[in-house]
Amino acid sequence: MGERIAQSKFDEKERIAFVQNLIDDVKALEILVDQGLIEDDITRIGAEQEMCLIDNDFRPAGRSMSLLKEIDDPHFTTELASYNIEANLDPFTLTKGCFGKVEKQLLEFLDKAKTKAEKLDMRILLAGILPTISKAEMEMEYMTPIPRYYKINEVLKDWHGDDFRIKIQGVDELSLYHDSVLFEACNTSFQLHLQIPSYDFIKSYNWAQAIAGPVLGVCCNSPYLMGRELWKETRIALFQQSLDTRKWINALREQVPRVGFGQHWQHETVTDIFKEDISTHRIMLTKPITHNSLQILENGAIPKLEALGLFNGTVYRWNRPCYGVGNGKPHLRIENRYIPSGPSVIDEMANFAFWVGLMVGRPEKYDDMSNIMDFREAKLNFIRAAINGRKTVFSWLNQPMPLQKLVLEELLPIAYDGLKKRNVDEKDIERLLGIIEARTKLSSGAEWQVKNYRKLKKQMKPDSAVVQMTKAMYENQQTGLPVHEWPLITETDEIKESFKWVGQIMSTKLLKLQEDDFANLATAIMKWNNIHHLPVENNKGELVGLLTWSHIEDLGKIKNNHNVRVSEIMIKKVVTVRPRTKITTAKKLMADYQIGCLPVCSGSNLVGIISKVDL
Image 1 (cartoon, rainbow, N blue to C red):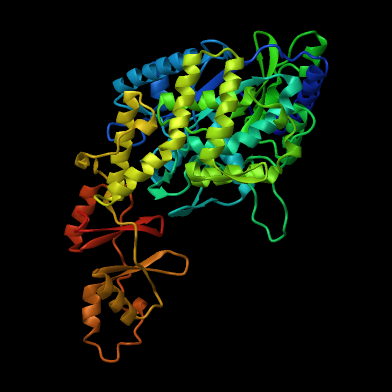
Image 2 (cartoon, one colour; image 1 turned 120 degrees about the horizontal axis):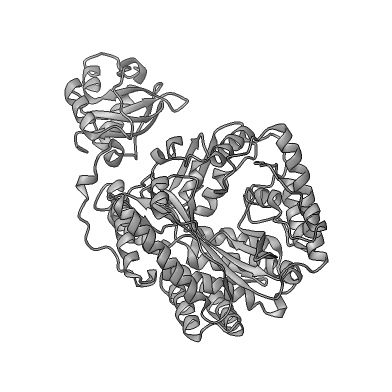
């Protein structure tokens, strides 16, 4: 998402020229494929590492531009939010020693980033979703100040015509509206690239779709968002919803999501995938194109297909087809976008080897997926894996198949054979695929987080629990151990010095009243739950008052009070604070106004309450 297009005007003239260039790029790609000009005699692998920036309190640190200036390396680039950065690894030929080279470079990049981050009082963390991220970091001040990001936000908001809605249900439920695309920035991934011969692209792409569910199931590492336990890989739902421009309409109409798995098996060539995407998705961004791709071809050179590349970068297939030019030669590759960042570098390398081994080891019986598996089953497998992770039961070749059985008995042998055929070091194969085998049998990153967070929440406030878990994730990453060997958290010392904001200590599971409720119901609820304050909302969910036990006691002095409404006795001028109000300010407000609690609001909506007990 970080391509710099500062010179773009995004005006009508530029758009007209861009559309024609996009059409010409598709035609140029058809010519390249038809004339056998695509580099088909070599296979390379590559990766992109997204990472989170955190401060010494293990919370998001929005200073990516300062860090990138310190790092001063073209391999590193920005992400949508200022608390994320990305490192682009070099491509390596898939052969002996390749995974060792990728791992070595990845560790060098991370060490470089860590060293520079420490100078700025920051740390680097690998996490599919940073556990300590909050709604406060979804504000526009955290968007990386680059024109492309602002334009994406502007266009998507305009297309959507309303606030974005996030609604994800797992063990808990997260349901809210938001006015920007920054929820997308909660997701960080380890994106994998594999070069594919043009003559085998469709077979490989369909196979990539078929194995996506099982591969994701064993790699899950994102079970929490803002303290809510949701899907084992919550990124899948969050990414789609945070960039969803489809409109809610009365008519029953099928609308293709901009982030998605796809609609069917592919049958023709790679250009047909691009044609389908251009046909079903509006052009989001434009930029000036200096040289037309067809003219470049006519002059005997290889075009970069810049318009197609920019458009393709704004359509988010979980398996994305890509075109590129390296050393003057055009190539095709599949980008795997669903693997989360972390839990550790060795886990990521195991995921990489597993996926690549499966891709290059595809048995002949899977050459035509449309004849042996319904596409909807493959798609459903992917969603099931995102929700259930390692506990998923898949539909595989018309048979129910638990993940453990499918991976251990069917897919791991394919991956072993695939890597051996490409002369990958035997030690690397055993080491990396051995981690996949152990994780399949024992525990994933998502399960490690769930076990620890559930335990921590019994001992402390949710905010303290996510900080403790993030701290443990960071410390375990430094050991280099794979996640199935990570110990459970035993020390749970609260990081008291990190308590700065009301949102860190407020209660979020609230009992509330409606303004037309009867006072006797309020009395009963207070007695049953041993509480002394009840916020009052209207039908729009807005805070309109506060009822306290002293009001109830005064009510007892009134005769015939059984039909008194809450709205008649509540405090209507309520002193409130926001999640990012300093705790010291909240203490002073309570003292100044001689009150025992403060409702916490985001806008006019109640999100929590803080009492003297919390303080």
